[in-house]
Picture 1 (cartoon, rainbow, N blue to C red):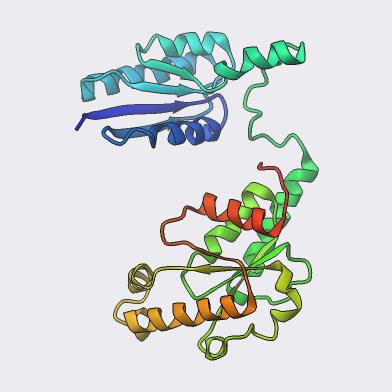
Picture 2 (picture 1 turned 180 degrees about the vertical axis):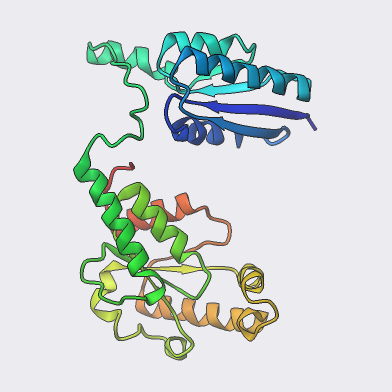
Length: 273
């Protein structure tokens, strides 16, 4: 096994872009343990010098060259960061020159704009979708006329985090409906869901994993017993099959993957924010 490697996500904005791309890259290397740190809003040479000092300190502590995944636009800022001696990976560099050639246009160095509020209409759609997800969480509201989609599953199968992710990243109005014991006594959709069957997507989960999650929430309760989890999951899956509701297991699937599968299956096309 390789040792521990310090990694810094450095940005002149929030650092979300650098961290998202960097995380995807690091997951390809399984024999190294990474210790990560985000340094955001490095928008001046002075702040870059401070960041470089932190990076050099990490090199001393870990006894190995750090990796910097950098999304800073300013060349002088990048040069100051490079003084740290770290391996510098510019997330935009591989793409800028080919795009400039193809578009016959020189890029404009717009600091901190990757996640800025450049389009207020889009931003408000995102906020409204978030409010919708919270209002319609776990069946709190069952007025689904304005919903883009409705996730259906037993309790603790991943409905809420998926709805929040869809709202924040796609501006999708996602509601979720928790299947109750009464609902699961039948293999047909609950009456309140039937008018919206074209908006429905079912989530399922391995009963062992569900029991672990519920045990953390309500230790040693009937709700968390394995037999309860097994019975509920089986009944939900039977309902989904009988009603031909598209279904995905969340057991080993990330929120990002779940969201992508839901949008594709239901034919909802939205750009990611």
